[in-house]
Image 1 (cartoon, rainbow, N blue to C red):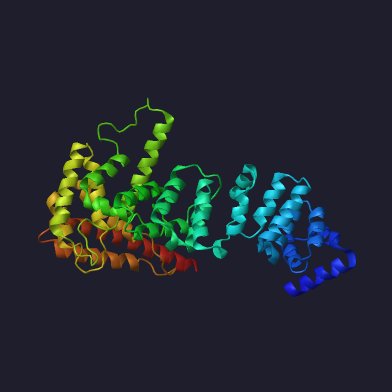
Image 2 (cartoon, one colour):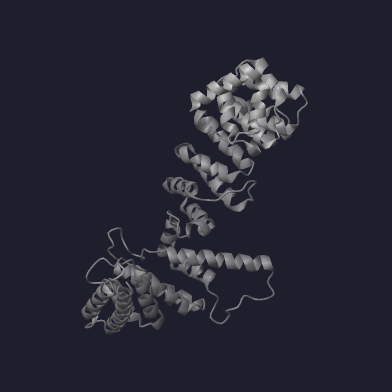
Length: 439
């Protein structure tokens, strides 16, 4: 295809001249592909100058055509070529916009950036505000320099995207600067945080010379992103800090819940402060919902009983002083239920004894509600009926049987949950029967 396109362009030039190619660029669906083909043919300076005379850099299709031509022509990687045609355009008294489009069409290089630094401020600003970094040809030093430039021009989305292939080159201080700036300074470009941000945060996590307090701060800043359901990267430093510090956990809790005796946000606060309170509460909610590992839980899922019990006791004491006792019990119940349900005897003794000893309705109700939610929705065949629900009911009856001797309150919770699933199983059986009759 490329060879046929090249031959066609060459034939048109031989028969009708360069002007015919420019006219064609206004009509084809992919003017950039025409520019690519022309770049393989047109190499003489005089011919390229004639092309520049004919093209309107500001017209959309012609701009795509000429920018593609400049980007693909091999000579455009030569600083002498760049300098010649920049001066040629300058002598034609073209606008600064045209000069900027010319420079941003040229493949990036350290030599080009040095030249840009010697140009007028408006040209420099226009270049760095719109250039598309092609860093694969740059030296390591040049790549770092380009990232710093992008940060200085508040192009944070582009800078984060470009770090993906040079993460190991980035100084730790630059990683922190980029992450902080991207979250706290208004960007000069549109974009969204996604996979590239998560990879940069992963790199931050690896760096031993970035202090833990700094990692915690950055994760909190990015909680609106890290707390999303599609986020692969979890706020592990914040999770660890909550496990280490009951005080921090209650601080997070206090951002989400008002004191029991002061549930409403005071009306006299201004709109900006109100929005800040709401946003912090949303981040706290996402953080608490994303936490799956218990205080004292090891990588092998073994639980340090004393650590967990002492942590819960201190959290409840602190929450009582903060007038948030009930909400602390809500979150404790939900957290305990997130422990992996992978054994026949569940939950293990450090959790089951805690639930029984605390004798809190809020903990028990939210524990069993979270257990129910853990199993979520299920997929099944159209005529399967309530088989899934019956299996779950059998499992929870087994838990109830195990705990009935030493932990009767917990046992009753599982019995009640099993009954709910059996009722649901009957409903699914009835629905399957109706479907069979309709079929």
